[in-house]
Length: 66
Image: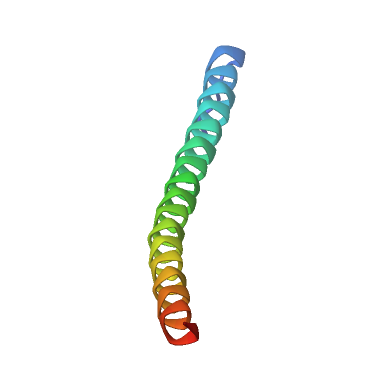
């Protein structure tokens, strides 16, 4: 027995697939944005550490220069 779909059912299925595709794409995009944000925060922490070590090395250099 073959199931036939009317125009209304086909349009509903097509629209549901379209909305599902956009929802999936939005979720994936938000996940990638979150990972980029986490990476930027980690880089900021490393930047602060590098800046502190450069200031310390400059202070040590100045101490031995005088």
